[in-house]
Amino acid sequence: MVHKPYCGGAKPTPEIAKGLDEALANTSFTVYKGSDLGNGTEAVLKFNTDEQGEVSFELEKGTYAVYANEKLMSTEALKAKFDFKDPRNYVFRDDKCFAMWKKTPNFTFQLTSDTLIRYMQNAKCWIGTVPCVDYVGKPAQ
Image (cartoon, rainbow, N blue to C red):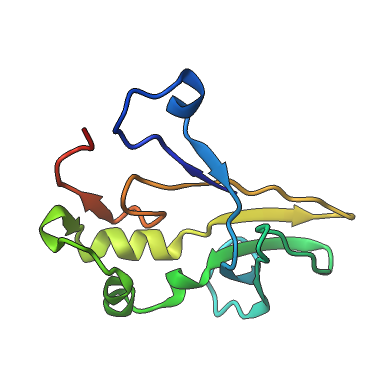
């Protein structure tokens, strides 16, 4: 799931002001054995979520780290993915921010038996889920 905050506009109802949870649909992830990408860790599974943001797979018992595939792209390629209608309203943070974000797993988990994992990712207004991009334009009126 991805949580999208209320981003302005007409006065919201209390429910709308809380934001909206949507399926993290058609998103690609890679799973690594261990808690991070250190020590030459190799991918054990790649998957895409379906339209409902769901996926099912089997893994051996152990500790795993899951990364969105966009974290595995070069910083230049990731920046090129953004298609801003007015680039003056957006600022990329420095390469240190991208490096830190890219090396941090989206989540880790310990698998000891059949497990159901629910994952919630937070989005930013007009940006999405990459924390190293900031919207600096006018807020919605």
